Length: 359
Image (tube, rainbow, N blue to C red):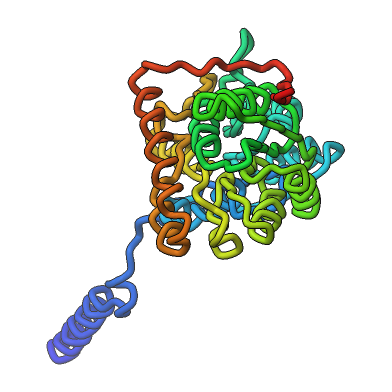
């Protein structure tokens, strides 16, 4: 009996030790893996009513996607190019669970509002739109507006000094209140620099067609215009090409077209929509999304600027034009300083512009 008892006790001890060893032993991967859940991505859709590839504000929204992804956003871009699909495309993104929807330009605003009402938990970033600028505001929409009449005034000052024929032109995308104010500001700048100038403008009625920009620019050049400013998105590439071929000075909008216009492009203005997208993303991450607010972007908060850094490059490439360009730039920059200091005020004049002619 005693021998049997001792044998059973020994066997029990062995079994207990085996169980204890098994409980303590864990697979290597289990000891090194983390049980903390990874941070869930925030889904953002960037919808443009103009084509990507404009080398300007639309592309600037796509260019910040790597930064957005580092911040924890999952991004999708979509072109929505005709009014009949604006609401359909925006609604599809909201229905697909995109928590942030970015759109550009005022033609899509009505569609944004319609979808935002149905998806109150979705945040909408409405760039260059006026949704919250009136009496009615929407808590899940942040709208921004660019006022560029001051920047166009400065470019007008530059062109007014550069022209040798006393004939200057401007080509804008399409008539809106902001575009009218920009053209009127440009004309005011030309006359501030050169009261003897004639100033002609034209709306291209498109932001996506370089051929139209080229045709308008060539027609202006045929009438003796030797300085043209373009503010028409992708259409501006045609303007730059025409000026390059005909030795006319050009200033453009929102992109550095120097590779195609090294003998014509002095500088360009910049309204960087990508910065709006990043600002909204940071606010969302910080819990400070500006829903219900309307923000004006302009020269006074460095959101709309003239890119002066390109002037030295132009002068180095075109030494025969350097003296005239530097003199014109000096005058334009002096006017910019007065603007920022409040010594000059450019009215936001939304009246349809009138060509300035000399009889």
